[in-house]
Image 1 (spheres, one colour):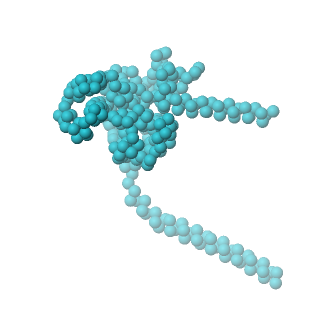
Image 2 (cartoon, rainbow, N blue to C red):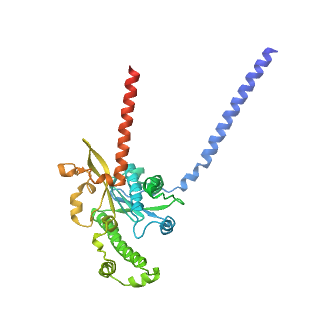
Image 3 (cartoon, helix red, strand yellow):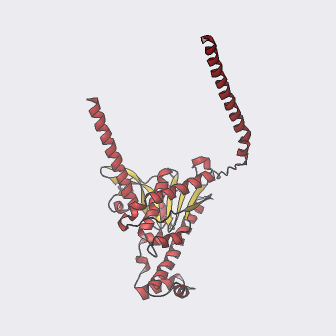
Length: 327
């Protein structure tokens, strides 16, 4: 009887094992049978040896700005939040040579030799867009804390990738975006000052219809005493993000810093040769290392300094624990 029970138990165990193997085999076969659908996936790879520009654009940002009561024509905090998101993207991709932001858009220039995601277009633009959006949400409270401005609904950004085969093409692209800042900001500065003076939106539009840049400058100066050239350079030129050596305490750290310059002129490219040629360096000479004074007021710089400080404190704490445990 005991022998019978023993054999019965062995049989049941073997039967169960065989059943598992059969199920596993059927499952594997089922997977392979359906695997053909992968043939419908198309890999759109970006051409090699070309600059890749991924541009982020806010989706429905006119309404987003209205709902969150952003200042017009420019909200400094909102622009700084865009810079924080741009910094986060550049921290993720060392292959980015330069970032450029204005209004609700940001451009990221990937080097010619960049092979991130094997230059698969869909992977690259989807990751950059999602990272930018999540960073925008992540840093919201940090930027708007003093205004007690809560986010009412999440923003969204679309993205596209464009290839530029030559350095000249790339420079022209960035010049186009900076020229766009000037045109839009001059119009918006004039328009919103007219509205603030009592005109309706439609009346302000009619007054500006057909005007040239010189006409808008004249309206600003004669009616509101505003010299457009004295407006904050961030509003007039946008924000350039570059990796630069910065003197922090007794050491030099590579930080992503905001630069507000005219990038249309040749002088900009002479001052920052590492953009077009990563083998070039700006770390030679005392003038090549940026001083922290003034930079720490920029949110993206102060944030990076805080992160460095936390890392330093963490290393010191770990070292102290290690010393105690060894005693």
